[in-house]
Image 1 (cartoon, rainbow, N blue to C red):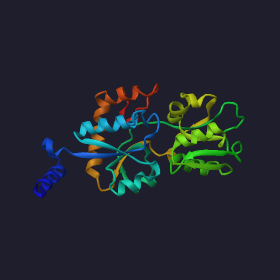
Image 2 (cartoon, rainbow, N blue to C red):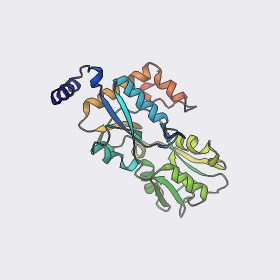
Image 3 (cartoon, helix red, strand yellow):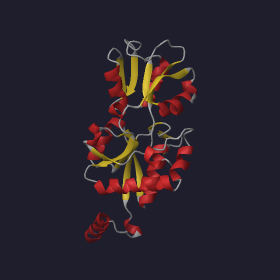
Image 4 (cartoon, helix red, strand yellow):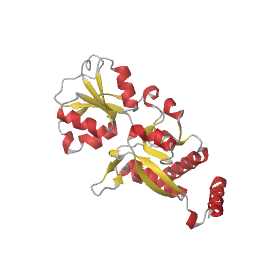
Length: 261
């Protein structure tokens, strides 16, 4: 058995085809609390755009993939601890994160915005949010931006973005800053979001929000990262990406590298 396992590992390292009995397996770290990108379905399965993209990549890699649910702020340490092999969780590519993990190319584009109660007089400015409570998901680009750009506000941190929405509805916070798609489709278009609205400008400065979401692997897994890039390129080129995106989004979120000129 040891000899067979060593043989399979060597074949993977060389990029050779493996027999069906030695199919490559990958564990994908996912959040399952960030609709429409990932969420728990009523039957307990995990669904969403991140999940569909991860599985489409796995199909291209001819790998058997399993999903491992994790809180967002625990994902990079869990990847380093080998609890999974890749993170597919709308994780933006930033210089700080790139010191710890290796990212694939960007796989979608979006921006950040504030959501507030429609009847609220709050202006989305540093002065307008002074003394107000802003809800953000912990250890995200949104937290970092809110702390720096709205120093007079009280920043309330949550393990999951859904928890921030719940507190917004309950009146425990005055506004939340998050990805505009997550706000629109994960909150505003649901019953709980009635009476709330997007407000203020869209934010997408790479200085604060990175290059866009990528799939993260361990720094040493350079070959896996390259293969994931090839798989992403392939699913965009053959139309798979567009079909998956159309299930969730009314706007084009295709990354710049994948758009037709």
